[in-house]
Amino acid sequence: MTLLRTLRRSALAMPLLASLSPAVAEAPGDVARWPTWIIASPSELRLPAPPDEAATRGELEELRRLAARRDAAMLARIRHWDAGGPAYRWNEIAVAEAVRRGIPAPLFGRHLALMNAAIHDATVASYDSKAAHGRVRPSAVDATLTTALPSQATPSYPSEHAAAAAAAASVLAYIFPEKAAAYAAMAREAGESRIAAGLQYRSDVEAGMTLGEAVGARAVARGRADGSDARWTGTVPTGPGKWQGTAPALPQAGTWRTWALGRGDAIRPAAPAFDGPEIARDLAELRAMDPSRVQSAAAVYWEAAAGGLRSPAFWNEVTARKVLEHGLAANPAEAVRAFALVSIAFHDAAVACWDAKYAYWLIRPAQLDPSLKPLFAAPPHPSYPSAHACLSGGAGAMLVRLFPSDREQIEALMREAGESRLWARIHYRVDVEAGNEVGRRAAEKVATMGGLTMMQ
Figure 1 (spheres, one colour):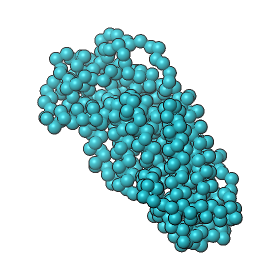
Figure 2 (cartoon, rainbow, N blue to C red):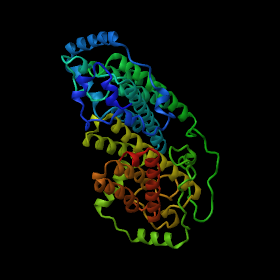
Figure 3 (cartoon, rainbow, N blue to C red):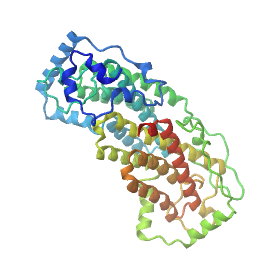
Figure 4 (cartoon, rainbow, N blue to C red):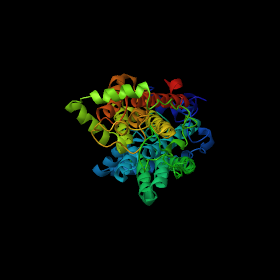
């Protein structure tokens, strides 16, 4: 049954039908058909019917009382949790904590992907229940109710913001267990903000929290089994053309469970021979290179501020900016989907990149030719392919799919991320080219599995 047919069957439908705006949000029935990442189907978590008309009258009275008591502090919290849609603040919270702890890029990206997949599936499942039950918004029942924000044209039950908050808090509590109580309190505040705003009933929020916790539990189970906590028991190979070092960074990351690739080696690029013509060509390019001050500054920027440990943060911030620039806060499902697809593409590109790095153990340029003077020390992992190119390629390619009008700007960032490693003399050009291709192919796989082609 379509949303409109469901609403027409409700005695309270007419006030809501008058306010429907197709440009504001996806129809719940359409969102409920989106592919999910953690749950098998949105309908498996379909909620029971919302409270009856008599109970709804009591809940409306609570909303009226809260509306009369709104002050500046309450309005500030309402606006805080509404900004950017259901996933925006949770990504802000997760990124800040991961940066503070200095979590390596592949693991950092894994955390964001797990959280955003949970938020995505909780949101999609909430839309399934919205379509099934068609509960109208409080302000459509009582036209005198003053809301703190515009009321959306989707059914009220359950609260998608509460579902997203509970799912995010569950995953973050698993990742950072010492902060579990703080995350639970934040989730409760996020849900309560929808009640204080007069946008949803208390039962909508409670149902959303229950739904989000169920998805969060499934996400945590997936996280515990994805191999990210496995210890490496191998040894660093030796011999001509092999990377030189004693403490390789996350050599087991290429074996982690992926979301769309099937296996980390599914898109493994062919390796160039360290003594072959490609590497000889690239070494000659590096020897002849004379980076400008601007290029040198860019190389440092992509190493210290936008790459390395901060690479997941950088591309997450670009995603957040695009969500805000394109007004996706008015369409919660689309906003959530953007964060999920970008972070999942980043993760799968990282796993594929680390798989190739430790399949080939290619020597770094300055190790092969000690006369080269890098701008700064290379990170402690093999040269091929470039992690900057893989990660920026995965996240950037997905952003181009999501925001095609911003293609030129996004692709410029992707190019600079890769070129910066040449300006620093820590990668061969073939590393960058292979990394770009790994990222692009990972993003395509994620887009296909996420149904992006179908929905555009």
